[in-house]
Every structure is written in C-alpha cells, then in structure tokens.
Image (cartoon, rainbow, N blue to C red; front, side, top):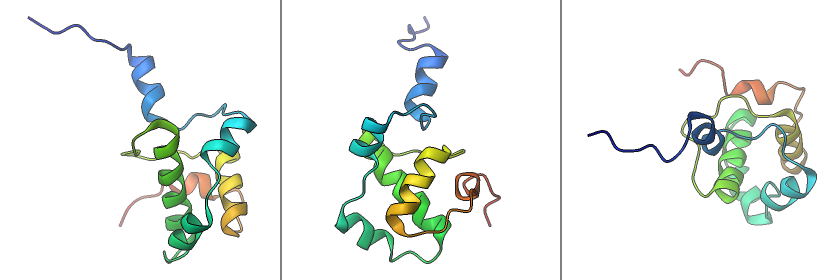
Length: 102
C-alpha cells in the first residue's frame, strides 16, 4: 500500500526553492550576514563561490536546511548579498549558479 503524501508537489517545491517574492523584512532578517559570516565567506576565492556560500548560509537560516541545487538566485537576494560582501554583481551572479560545473 502506498503511503499518503503529506505535501503537494507545489508545497514541496516551496520548501526547496529560494523565494522570488521575499519581502524586505524577511530579506533583512534572514539574508543579513554577520561580521563572522562575511569574514568566513571572504576566504573563498571567487565571487560566485562567495555569493553561493552566502546564499547557502542565509537559506539555512530561512528554511532550516541547505539547498541541494541552487538554481537561479533571485536578483533581490543576490544584490543584497553582493552589497554586504562588496562584490560587483553586474546582474550576473544570480545566473551563475546555473553555469556548468567543471
């Protein structure tokens, strides 16, 4: 006998994706990096790794677990993290997570 599914496909997806429509209050609460976070993140060698690590840390705070596949990082979040990490975003960092891995 098949077990009952507790969540619909849409509900399940909402738990594993970065929200596009995050409001400013949630952005400030969950996506603001501490001085320790920034110091730790700055140890990584390129801006894509730094922004990706920042997203992982913040999503962990936001949802309680890390993201297995980043997908596309919403512009609002990548710009907010880029400002904190002093990274020139150039509008490309959100799409960097979709680039082919080597």
